[in-house]
Image (cartoon, rainbow, N blue to C red; front, top):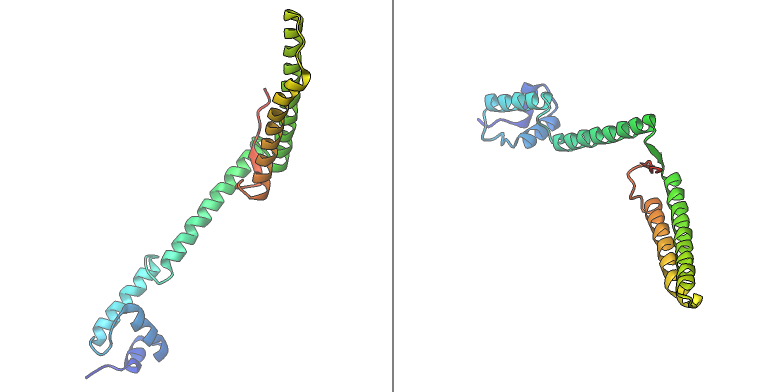
Amino acid sequence: MSLTQLDIARHLDMSERNARDVLRGLGIDHHLSSLDEIRIAYIRDMREKAAGRGGSDQASLTRRKAEEAEVNTALKRVQLHEAIGSVVQAQDAAEAITDWSSFANREYLAGITKLVSEIQIAHKIEIDGKKVEDIAGPTIARIKGHAKRVVMLRMQNGTSKSPFCPRLSRR
């Protein structure tokens, strides 16, 4: 005698629709299986789910738990670095990079100006300032432009994982 889904539902104390879903989830054909086989498969499936090893959403749940653990770890790391003072706001770091590039450009230009002056005095020659500016100017512009690109990429594209950056050391 073939079992009906209603027979199985009554035996497992559930609705007929729920029994149909359970059978489908277990991959059991109720026309070919006995009531004992269905009950044992159902009990084993419930044990697996209760132990956290089974279920249709188990892979998704495991992935979400791993992501949550990773986020919590990252957050705790940021909080630790905030507490010990080893991070700065990304905006502060961006301002520091911009300030540094301005300082570097001024120092570079001052060094070139001094070098030109020393060469002129030592060799008693005139050096065309326009020629020096034609060479030094683009270099200064590239330094300034690079600093701005770094800041903009960090701030706009979200390449920073958090609004914090490692503290810039001041030597």
